Length: 431
Image 1 (cartoon, rainbow, N blue to C red):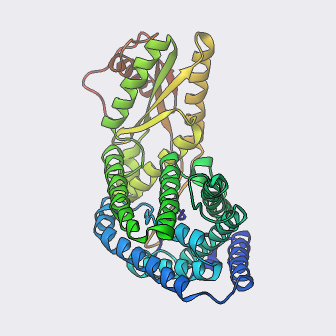
Image 2 (cartoon, helix red, strand yellow):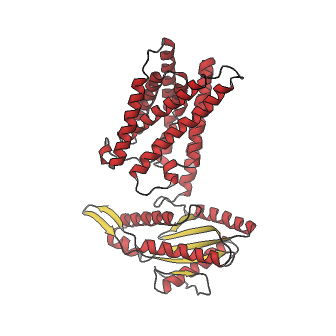
Image 3 (spheres, rainbow, N blue to C red):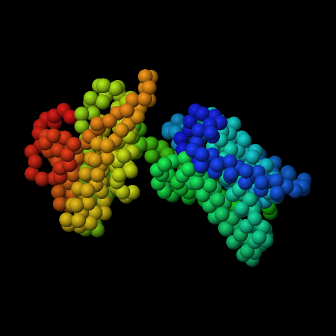
């Protein structure tokens, strides 16, 4: 599992990290060195040849996947799924620890040259990732050895169980160590940022499982290992397709859902509300006098403000709430699974008021040629409506929430208003 923080232009900038993160990174790397030194032994010629073969397979895999990765990176700057675990895990199960480490080092050195350095990923991140993989591989190797080695027959239940446990331990060690360094470098981080998305973790587990199958094939019928390459490349393409779908649904400036994607999810949620006879709400938010920010500081600063407001929205609402950007300075939030009756109304109003207050307190530092500029004094007007009280379809509820937003604008801005008998001005006035 690779660290998901975005690439930077720095090289060896480890010392810019918080002291606790530096201590963790150096400690993990020192632990990897210690286990390598303590596990040194004289390998057989056959083991050396197998290590070379695994390294060759990894190089071929990376080179074949480079074209897919180039397309993926043009689509969006997200973490690279090199899927190299298929080879490093196989090395952990098949080889003595020192040779497994050599394979891991060779695999990650090639990845550095072909993938990570062109992407301008800091070197210390790549070294730390390599160290976590070495420790994960040593843990997996120890488990399989305790189980009696790789299974030699269908009746070798302990060997099969050993591989299964090794898969879990390999993923767990890697995930925990990566999550630890993310926690040490971020002041406020959620579970998703620490552990990654479910899809990403499932992909890593699937890759490691393929590594286990590759190890068994190499141990008994080496020619069959060539069959691992096609499904691995298909996995690369699956990641690419998934990412392109996400890009098509995401607003580039804020990282929120775009209007079309939000409406698709919103319509689906409204249908679920009707089936469950539940309650949901829609909030429409409009930044007050946002044109002044663009006119005073430029559109790039305005984009930074929009991104900061989007981050504040994500931090304020619940995990199941659906947040999107409708365009311009308008945002929309869908609140599903609200309690029925007055309790739901109270929660809807509390969320809206909390958003309003947090935006009012928001300060956005922006780098400019003249130094750091701090944008403050922002405010937002909020209009809300509920399902099914104010409408039975998403369009009806959006219209009711929009009417409420007009009311908040007319009454002075920086206000929260909810659906009621309001007059919608026509045409829409400037905001």
